[in-house]
Amino acid sequence: MPTPGVDPTYIQNFFESQTGEAFNFFNAFTGGSFTQMSVFALSITPYITSSIIMQLLTIAIPKLEEMQKDGEDGRKKINEYTRYLSIALAVIEGAAIVIGFRNQGLFGTDNPQSSMTTAIVVAVAALTAGAAFMMWLGEQITEKGVGNGISIILLINIVARIPNDLSN
Image (tube, rainbow, N blue to C red):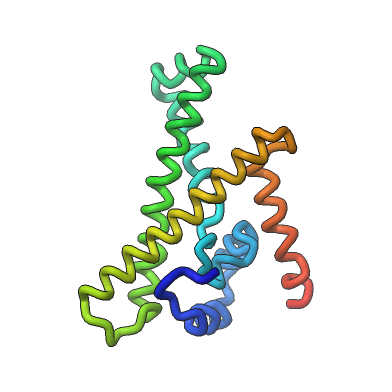
């Protein structure tokens, strides 16, 4: 499902012209949705980043360290903070991607400024919603006892790219 306002042919042409390993690496984590600029282009990367940030802050901030030692209630509170931070990071990452691609002509240049702003806001909201859905899905997988949901989603994304990577 493409991000609203995105020109999919431009995205395809843009990524076909890129040979950098950074795009390929990030695209592997997103299961190919980054190069298609789908609503799941951010995948679970904001959640992973926020988890790392919270782990580091737990060491640096005594109150968070105390919460972690408080048992299940403290860990639930830290997980709640991690989810909030994930959403904030998704907004920031989504805005950076959308604005960066807009500067490359992703949204076209013939739109008036007001509709350009609307297109950017809608695209950022769609990317943020996609990342939030992936985070929720990972938590549901974990709660059902299947395994670590975030790791399973990462594995599925990487495995989904194997046939395409082998053909390339």
